[in-house]
Length: 74
Image (cartoon, rainbow, N blue to C red):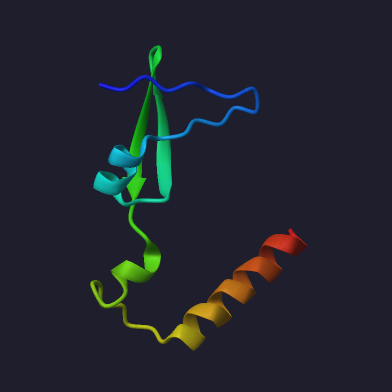
């Protein structure tokens, strides 16, 4: 068990032994009653090839641009 301190800027540093075991840089933060839970999120590029989608990258980018334009209009 390790005790860490929250800085005046709201930053929390995880000890090296924790970081080396988790190997994540992004976390989902959940507030559960009076506790904080960190859920490691996978790196998107590491997921590449693990899921099959029926669209090309160009089609996804185009759909994203269309969505952004519609959202900006309304």
